[in-house]
Length: 145
Image (cartoon, rainbow, N blue to C red; front, side, top):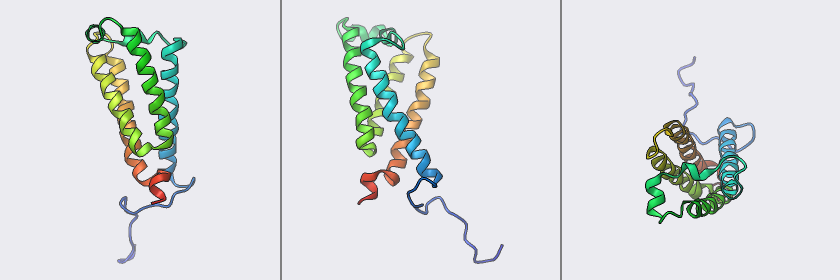
């Protein structure tokens, strides 16, 4: 190596393009966090995947006056909106999804036997945070500024 040869540094902005691994990671996360909230949100109404009501902690059900199913339907609408938001404005809505997942994790920790699901959702929470950070560099809205 020559004395003046530079190393590639992580703080150097890389051009946006399909050949760029960082941009690929951003797009993979974005597609995932558009589809997953929309799919789970829609399924709150149809229960094709699972009966989502079983994931609501009894204490939360009591807090909403025993209207757990109605609460889950509202949650479905929020999830659909969050997924659409990630498609349109990931710099903001990736943080919304992360906050939503944090609420889900807290709820799941209140139910014995669902700690494994809470741990999985913690992984999704970290992915949503990674998307939020990557969107600062790769979001179409950010790149056009």
